[in-house]
Length: 225
View 1 (cartoon, helix red, strand yellow):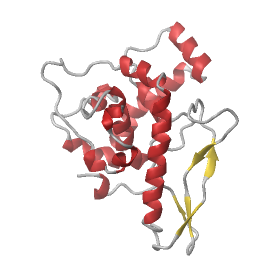
View 2 (view 1 turned 30 degrees about the vertical axis):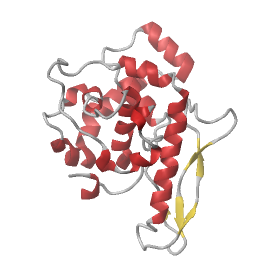
View 3 (view 1 turned 180 degrees about the horizontal axis):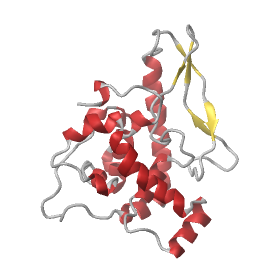
């Protein structure tokens, strides 16, 4: 399952395998099959939670990013829309730490949350992959299941193709992909380059790739080439 990889393996970004497009694949292809599989796979959500716990443990072991002091847990609740990893009535916890010395907040990276967005990161990725648009019936189903409006999908596509491509993370990383990724087909064109494992493993690898955007931290060479 998930390409046979363990949660702890996803904390090492160098293990993300970038590969060329299969010349017989005809280039970028829609991944709606991935969307359907992921949204119906309950173990995916628990797997992402385990990755976040591992990321948090590693961040805590490094000490404060400002002074090197000891970090103490300062978790706080998040209320993402459609969070299937949490039982009804149980808040979703966002890992966070407070420095014992300078009292600054230290946020670990996360594969569940993509910044301050109210939807989980994998929802933003999977539904943004519906390049052909969504029918009125599809929008009605998404609104019923996820509380998602058409304008939200449009806003996510705009983020991928106009804002994400300007981030320091992408400016560092895009040169590592050969041939060049078609930015007009994001996020599909990026997901296709993660060739390690099955469809769900590729989704998790893409989430891991995006973790520098999940917390307020500088994008440095550590996250780039």
